[in-house]
Length: 186
Image 1 (tube, rainbow, N blue to C red):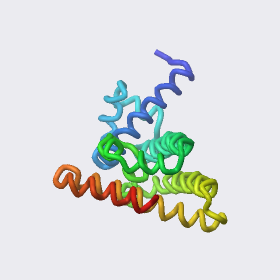
Image 2: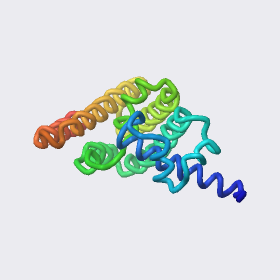
Image 3: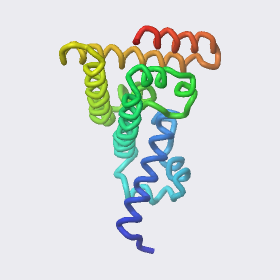
């Protein structure tokens, strides 16, 4: 049965959304095409109507994850830089599935070259949003604000990755990492 272009586009978007969630939660190498398609409610064979291979899916899922994350960054920054930092470095964000593509996909991007362009674009866009927020908060000069944004992202993402890595075996340490980073970046 033939489906409309509109339905095909909706199906493709559903596959990307599911893949993005699964890749961020478990890593690209730990998710199969069959798992993605099953979770999206489609057959494995239908995958190739939308993507050439898993690498193409991973690339587009990374880009889609950053597009959604950037909306979240904008919303968080609209409430203020301090609010955004507290939200990012919270136990709820640490414990949530997926979350920030920088924290969830950084090691995958290092191993999968096809992810790097989308990852870099998402990082640059995040840095631009934070640079402007820092300028509005009083950091003088674009270069100084950009350097501060780079340090802020590095601290926040690193803290989140480390806090997630020990949250079950050393929950107090995990909480300390979040708390210390919240204090350091404000």
